[in-house]
Length: 220
Ligand SMILES: C[S@@+](CC[C@H](N)C(=O)[O-])C[C@H]1O[C@@H](n2cnc3c(N)ncnc32)[C@H](O)[C@@H]1O
Picture 1 (cartoon, rainbow, N blue to C red):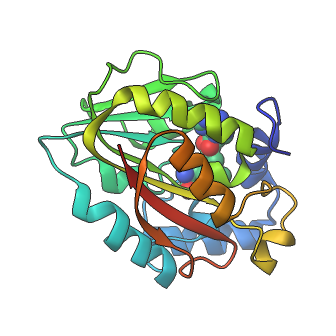
Picture 2 (cartoon, rainbow, N blue to C red; picture 1 turned 180 degrees about the horizontal axis):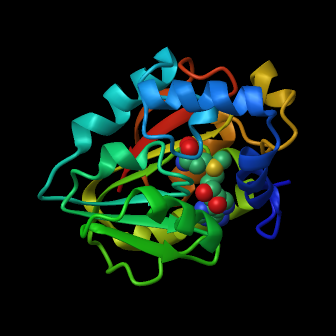
């Protein structure tokens, strides 16, 4: 799948509203009413409830949220993680699909949240070296390593030297990723190489929290 024109994300968004029987939809609605704001994407796991995702939130997201800082989320989808990032002074939600940004804006539209439709690997309208924190979950898992290389080149231009970049990516060294054909052909070894070649410094790697993917945190 990992090509930019793939309909994967639009198909997932459209089918999330239609594929289920009324029983399943009712059960989901009740679950959302009790546990969440009903944002698109929670069907893959709610960080309020699912332990590994809660760990990701508590370790890689919440400690970095700072009202004096500017942040970027790449591929926000319906806002499953965006809701934890709204405490930044400025938050750019960058997505390749305008339809997904529209979905996000249904639930989230505070004045500090800026929606950016990009061309797949760029950050149009974001000033050079202005960003303190970058987060992406569930997006790079689908991106071909060539696109990741391009993304990191663009990213280098917008982040400050003391920034933190947290990327969740496909890890085909894990069986669960091998079984998922929408996941790209990436591994921690390849990801390390891409990050270092782009001129970043790796600060932290998490190879164990997720069953089908891994997380890397790096800085300039
Ligand atoms: C599977 S969803 C994950 C959404 C959200 N991050 C979450 O975890 O619930 C993938 C998101 O990445 C977006 N996306 C796909 N390719 C992208 C790209 N090249 N650049 C930015 N966003 C992209 C999709 O439109 C969608 O919003």
